[in-house]
Length: 222
Image 1 (cartoon, rainbow, N blue to C red):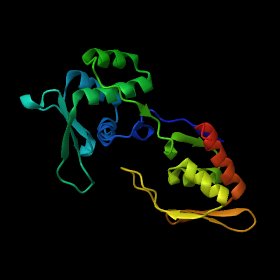
Image 2: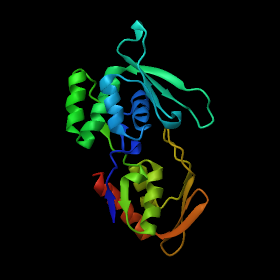
Image 3: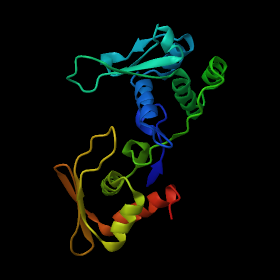
Image 4: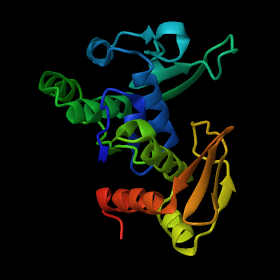
């Protein structure tokens, strides 16, 4: 069993389409705080805030030449002592908040955000189809197959490798996400060996193909 069911209150459920690094950073700021309703309430009153442990935050510059802007603040790594900062249009930030509110179906926040800034940029948010946490799955073997295929980050490439029974050994590259190395080998008698970081498991090739076929079906990829 595999069900695609993004948790819409978690950052990894969202991506921007087309992908934009500034919009992605804005999403990072929004989801750095646990309570999204608080984030939206602060936006409506233009109140600056910093999340727990300084992982993210929003400031409203006081300088006249920064009018209409917000300032994103974040720690680049756990050992950093100073926040990094960059500016973004407030309309862009409100557009991100509005997109999240629409996904969550929060009508009160939608109306309030639209009233605050009717010219907010329309940002298209899409669930991240390669995020493992966005799936509900049953069975350890199925989970291993799913995690390995998603780590490739390209369904067409996963299909091509499966069709040619080509093994792979790679470190997935996705901006803002740190992955462990993954490896897949074809053994005898319809068995595959999958490896993620220092963990490995033998799975049936038939199961691997079933999982891949299910993913292609869920996301309507031909």
